Image (cartoon, rainbow, N blue to C red; front, top):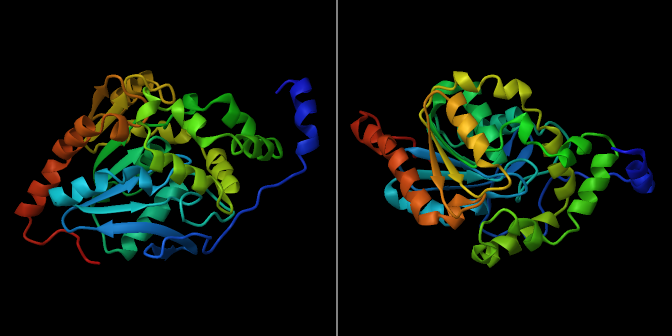
Length: 311
């Protein structure tokens, strides 16, 4: 950062962001939580059949998958989605927010829910968590579907690099979170008019919850991908990459790169679509996802034991 830029923000650098654990104002009365290694994790678990675990992206929550969950459940899957540490209704404690740490949180929840093997579906930064999970316990992950993956060190903007510095990151995130959510989200869509109003409202409310800024900053500081990305070629699971052609957040060249790094990956590109194919190209991308997951249903039908459906 140039010296004049530091001079401008220097008066603000003394501030700090507060973490938060425990219940938050406005929690849905029907929300379900699990204590995973001391972290209160918000999740949903619905349906019966082979398990599909949905992982949201940065500054998001499990509501990202609201329109997809009923379709997968109707298809015959057990659908599990969670708010990662730092987001949604899950705790924002001080600590490790790296993809490896978030992946361990997922395994902790799945162990409690009695789920052994599962398919992983993830969006954006959540894709780095999904890939970390596949590397940690490869025998448990049957296949991967990644939407507009954010998984390379080269994808990190200067804003994120600056945020690694103590004080600077706190100031930048305080300023970032004061901006209008609808304006920030518009750049993630090819056609901003299709952004669901409920999604904007959900994001706006989530950003105002206790510990939101601290959790998000910790997640940014956990995004050191160099060691992780060096291992991608060892991930053998069948992988579907779903990408918006006009995505300016995670541009298509990274989808093409990832399709070469992952040995069993297929890249599907959606025209006139930005960073959220599950919303902006909902029909086409959900149909492709269901086709990709179909072997899970076939395998479950042929198995002598029923798939994980213990509640």
